[in-house]
Image (cartoon, rainbow, N blue to C red; front, side):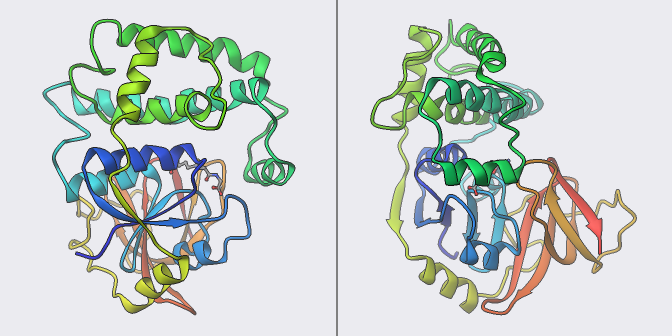
Length: 306
Ligand SMILES: N[C@@H](CCC(=O)N[C@@H](CS)C(=O)NCC(=O)O)C(=O)O
């Protein structure tokens, strides 16, 4: 199989989630560092418009969004599982993970804006343009929510090493990266607003998983790999389910655009070649790369005919 190429940047929490999942599954991967603000010409050549970080490239297949990438990595390397059903039902794990990626993540972002140094002006303007309304939820509003969420996590960890039991699940990776924003990264980590030994121990345990075997890769090399590769046929890529599932009345082969529901809504246009219960796939042609397939999860994304 072609190499796993993660496009990411060091300070990105969602990237940290995937770096840790790659470590958990002891996978070897190539590391391409991308800019943290626009312009991102190579990123957009690969994705067709999607600009969020991170995403996974496998040859000429581009997997967007960490939720989808976790499913891809699970299909590729099933053990240890991110969804161990001996620990909890998959619905519970995925729902807790989604809460952590959204409510917990944004409460952590808003809380840390108040507690930490401001973002550099260029990053601040870029995130505002993405739809992060900094004037709407202020640290004073976020702090009580963040504290309540940390209390819930500490409560789950009171009698077990991971959020749902004896081993980690997808939910641990999602909650970890939200807390990592302030408490682990950077030269001077902030103290936890909730001083809980169980949280501190759990952060330590999760961080110790590490990042797997990463090799630096130049963006031009990743572009060359995409240009020299053919995308995998539908049904033979790394996505788990395959049946066509139409909820829009849009036919296979139609020209469509897919964009995030919120925060970074730059659309990717292409020909709809898969619409399953869990994901969409688009075929598109880039002037520099030729044909690439770009994959998105259904949850959190909108599909429009062109
Ligand atoms: N739901 C997305 C969220 C990704 C996300 O918001 N990433 C942040 C960085 S951690 C981002 O894209 N920031 C702007 C950028 O990198 O251009 C996922 O799971 O991948």
